[in-house]
Length: 499
Image (cartoon, rainbow, N blue to C red):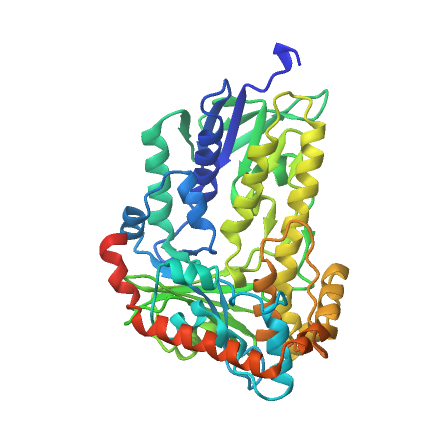
């Protein structure tokens, strides 16, 4: 590698959490190297009513960035979440929770869900999420931090609900206070100059006419995809055949009391609603199919669907779910600049962190970056498709019979890898795990069994354990969960020492 071809200047163009998380992670990984990082900040698209929900592993990323949880929680009016509750997707079946934790240890080295399937077939099983400590605590309005007993029983974790504007401000202030990143604010970008020899981006012109040059460019501009989509012309491959909702109503309601440690997604005829609790208010989204429901009708029915008074209300066209190859030339798109997801499983930040985690391990040292680009595109594309497939299941596995949107979703063809995964689990409860899965085994079990995909058979090895022993172990788990939950406190009790 010659000195002339060395990567020396990395430019991130973006806004809001995508910009600040990207700049923070890349600074943390490379600030002791010779790479100069510039963050070009575009005007924010976040509004006072916006909420950012996360999955369970966001706290690990915050730890890597040395973001103290307590002050963050207080500033961002944040609550903890033990999982996500789904209501009304399965006909008359009870709601179910996707908990951010496992269901306890295997029995005689056989996965627990296989024993549950056997008990279910005998009419002896309680709801599957009854055996989740996270789901049980959330259902009783309780929160907990794992202790030694809990760690021995299951892997239990939590995510956050964050005020979007405040969260972005925290990230920005921490980054700028720590130094090591050149920060430029602009009202927009103009011409993007490309190298005529290889098509790489050479510079980005700002609204004031100043040109920012670089060797490697990160597009964190969100759904606008100003560099990857507009400048590099990476096409968007649509996923709308699997995600029918194209309108989003966003609003806020009064705070809930007591505060639930979960977000709730409730299906209705033309879409679904999401309720996300913060300390000072409740975030509301109504995601719907515009061909079936007008904005006016959505506004009128939202308070009834949510059971809360709402204000203010905004309507936007949902960003059509789809995918762009994330690395083209010397431009890398992260988050929505590369991939737009349906909002149902709170995977927005996860997709952003997925790209950034791979980028930190594959950041090129040389302008000849073909090897890194190929590996990044393979791994990140695979991970994003696995996230997409998990989300598709909420639509594909629904049991809302007689409603056009949901009937169409249930009958739709799904990607081959997902179709095979569903087919094999439906046959005997065996889960195919592909490379680059974000949602792992217990997440898929919660999804499939919660939506009523009950396997036709169970692993015959289950029969080697006497029924009396199985019954004893199931009861022992339920007793453990009941006793632990009884000792837990409401989530508000944890705010004094967590912010």
